[in-house]
Length: 229
Image (cartoon, rainbow, N blue to C red; front, side):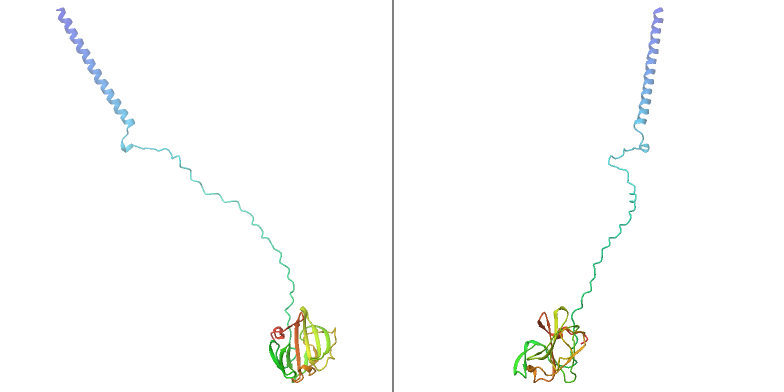
């Protein structure tokens, strides 16, 4: 009897122990399940609530603001250059017609012209102005009378010295009494009358033989006549 009671107690104790073990296992399982579920919520959030924040790129830089304007500088005053001195340049040498007569023989050093008096062909070193209508002879330009003389071939002669070593030569004059060497004359001033004193042009009509030189070289007087002549 006592043995049966002991066996019942043992069975009852085993059942309690087994029950407690099962209950403990169930509780441990529940705790483990709850722990796994909680952990999964923390580590693996749902796709709808997933938010990923990336760290800033190491190559990104702050956007620079607009550069501040440079401080205004005072304008540099212009450098004034001194104007070159202006000198009054002498006007080019020009002459007026020494006679109002017509030109009856031109200046010619390249083409030979026939001479009635000498009966040959020769150069002509000046311009012949007819004195049939007027005999008046005037200074072709301002100057100083350099010489007055009678040439054996070209008759009565007056030589006037001008600027730039120009000389005007008046020949075949009727006289040389109006001026003397050293006299100062102005352009257009009457100095003589044309005539027929040149033996080398004796058969030509009365005329003025007019020549022009520069640096003692003969030049064509027509190249130096003023434009209004």
